[in-house]
Amino acid sequence: MTANDHLRLLADIRSATPGSPIPGRAELSAHLRQRIGEVGDKALAEFAHVQRVASEMWGAERASHFGKVLRSHRVTPKAPRKTAWTRAEEALRHLPAPWRQPVAHHIALSRQGKRVKGRTLWSAAYTQSVISALKRWADKCASDGFDLTPTGTALDAFARHVVTGTGSGHPVTTRSAADYVERVLSGIALVQPGFSSAACDFVVADWREGAAAEGPGTKTGAQLVGASTIYNLGFQHIGEARARPMRGLHAARQFRNGLILAIGTALPQRARALSCLVFDSTLTLPDAKTIQVCIPAAMLKLPEDRKQGAPFERTFRNAPLAAVLLEYRQSFRPIFDDGRALFPSVNSQNAAISEAQIGRLTGDMTEKAFGVRIPIHRLRDNAATEASETLAGGGRAATSLLGHNSPATVARHYDHSEGVGAAHDFGGFLASHQGTGVELDI
Image (tube, rainbow, N blue to C red; front, side, top):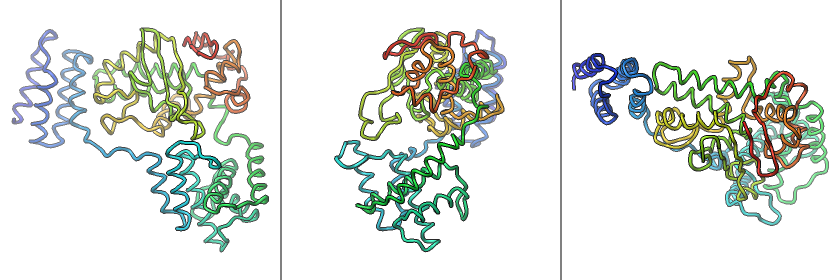
């Protein structure tokens, strides 16, 4: 192939009519593969221009397979993402040598997920946080000449140290300092069996009480813009993706991001649960109005020994949301790859984005739209608040919506209703909420 072959393809498209046959995916892929061999990455920019010309001739949807071809040649295979347990095991090297084996043994035990008498299993995330706290404790002890075995005085000094961020650390909130000292004691109890200190227990309780008195340090009233508003923002992004003149990766990504907001509000679960949504597996569309989700217990916020239990199941009746999910699957999702993950990665083929990335994208979109960053977890506050204001049953409805067993938990952490219902019209957003087999008209 020569430059003339590339120019000939452009000329053929420009001279075509809307009714002319469109070059197929196999033909285009062979063209691009050979052109990359001749001119390298320059061929990708050339082909993007070819897609723009084709979109002008045949329309964005009919020329969408140009974007699939470009995507398949642009993204190279990457190593699988490390699991949370792998990251925890790698972090062991930061601990003092005598502590590594006991923590490694507990990691192996916790990974099995089976109940063991006298042992509390840890999640991978909690294990990482304990290792991080132990490392920071060991560093502080080495710096100040303290013994690694905590005393009440030393543990309280450590909490004040992490709050102020003296040394190489960053300042943290009172709540985070309470977490630090609690995790230090959890780790010490593991690496020094039999350790007990009433003074240290008092320090943990004191910092917990101080954190409770201060309230959530990362939550503000400005983040409560209303679930309906965030849901509508998701559909706004979907509409803008649909209206783009070219059906390529940028359009597919915007459609995906809009779904993160819409699904994240309609199904107010944590980012980890949302990250596992897969068509025909954890998310199904049984008819034109219904959406069913089934999230494995392993992806929920549960004690580690309950993560082999029953999944979280919900059924949504929502024709507009079901329609955009079907449209996404047929026209936009295939641009990423041939996989079924609801939220695929831009940088890797056949991989979903991480829970952390879901949180970042949610914060970025809400900050741009509302001037305040609303992380994915804060969507739960908005959903619970609006459900409490709008639905019959108030807090009880919000409790089932969020998947909590206790209305008190929702009231304490999520329900901030103070007239939000007067400012926002649900418009049927959560029109019914009945019994334990929850069905939501959204």
